[in-house]
Length: 414
Image (cartoon, rainbow, N blue to C red; front, side, top):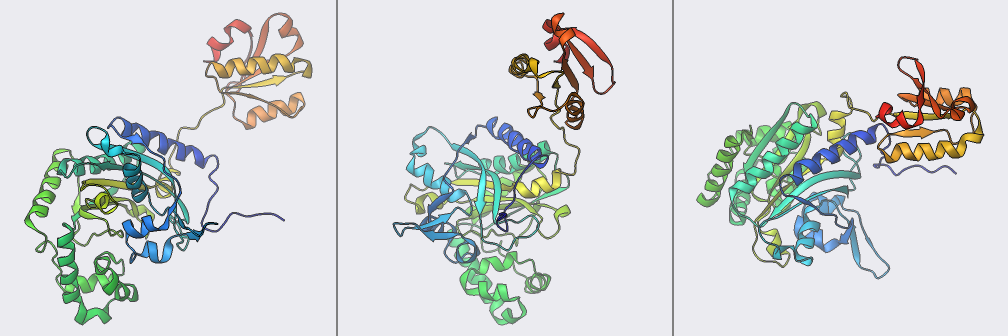
C-alpha cells in the first residue's frame, strides 16, 4: 500500500524549501535587530484556551478548530493561531517579570479544518511577532513598520496596508448595537453567512467579501467612527501620525475588522492583488484585554501574523539565489575512497559545499552526476596525481582542467 499525505497538507521540498528558508532567515534578521526574541510554543493546547481567547462564536472555534479528547478525556486542540499560546506562555513562564516590553517572534505551523484551496491549507505556517506590555501608539506604529520592513526585505511588491480602529470593549459593544439597528430591517438583503453572523458576531458583517453585502453596507451609510470614544480616536490619530513619520503608506478602511474576538483599537491587514481572492498576506492588531482575561494584569499588547504559503507564492517565481555545489569529488578507483572521504570532510569543515558519489558508480557516471548536480568544480582523485601530491581539478563551466597541489586546493576553490 502506498500512503498519501492528508488533504490540505503539503510536503515542502527543494527547490521550494530554499524560498521558505530565505523567508525564515530574513524574518529573524528583521525581528532580532528590533529586540524581538524567538519563542516556540506547543502545537497542542487545551481547547478552552482558544475558546476563551478567540471567542466561542467565531468561525475558527465553531467550524475550523481541530479538537479531540486524549486518553484522560481532556479536550485538546491543535493551535489555530499563535497569539493565545504566546499569552499563555507569557503568564505561565513569568515573562511579565522581565524588565521593559516583552518582544517575541515565532515561526511555525498552525491548523484549521478549512476547505483547502490556493493559499489556504489545513496545516499552514505563520511568522509573526507579539509585543506585550504597552498601551502606547508608538508600539502599534513599530509593529506595522516591521511588517513593511519585512516585506520590503523579502522583495514582495505591490502590497498595501489597510488600517482601522475598533475602539475599546465598550466601543465594540456600542458598534455591535449600532450595526444591528442599521442592518436589522435589511437583513434579508445580506448573504446567508452575514445573516448567521448577525446574532453571533455582527462585526464580522463589515468584513464580508460578498459584493452584494458590501453594496448594502454602503447604502446604509455605516459610520462606526462616530461611535468610538475620544480616547480611542486620539490613540488612532497618533498611530496614523507616527506611521507617516516612519514613511509607512497606508489606507484607512472603516470596514476592516478581524475574525478574532480579542482585538481592540488598532487593526490592520496587508493585501496583495496578485493572489486573487486569498489576497491577505498579513494581519494583526491590538489585544489589550487578552492578558487580563487569561488571568494576568491589565496589559497592552499588539502583534501580527504573516502567512508563509502566500509569501512563498509571491516569491517562488522570482529569481532567487540558489546554493551551488562548489566541489564534487570523483574517484578513478575505489582504492582512493578513504582519502576522498578525508578530503571531503576537510572541504566541508572549511565552508566549502562539497559532495561525492556514494553508490560506487563508474568514472563516467560520476562525471555525469557532477554535471547534474551543477558542480562548479570536479576534483578527480587518480593514481598518478595522488603519487605527485596533486589533484586533477576540472572547471565545469569552462571545461578547463589543471593539476593543483593539495595544499593549494582550499585557496583555489574558496
